[in-house]
Image 1 (cartoon, rainbow, N blue to C red):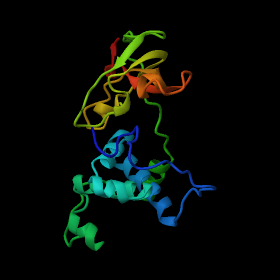
Image 2 (cartoon, rainbow, N blue to C red):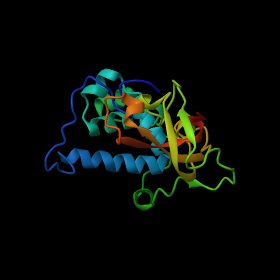
Image 3 (cartoon, one colour):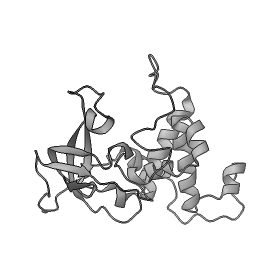
Length: 220
């Protein structure tokens, strides 16, 4: 999905300036947002890819002005509205509509504890399929422009790199984010030189390594 949220970043927004001695949370509400996301994700069956895609679907003006945890909070609200657990009016007023029925299990101490303590587990899968590429193979990142979620950054699309490592099959985010199944594929680490990506003025020895799924790649 193309937009201001591209995971590889975009030009024109100035340098990244890390905050010195940055705290884990700037305010208590940020920690509560994490707790709500973890609880609702485990309780309702959300996954990390669906959560990322919910953030991607924020209006660009909101995405650019929101802080990190504001993005998390607003995208969670949007997911709850889409699941018909709350209505936009209830979100605006902070009150549940009289007589409203929530067709989900009630929140109890038991399922809260299970949701918050249970590990998410590995996304690696054993498919038995033979990988299409091997370390040392030269590949080209596909020049795709999906309308849905993807983990293929725009800045690498169409460029040539080298397979460095085969990580085995992993859940494909492009499918998982949309409830279309895990569709596991082989995941590779691919090395791209800085000169390949950004021109001959870059240092010859500089390179970037990206973990990319098999369907993102073609033989070069």
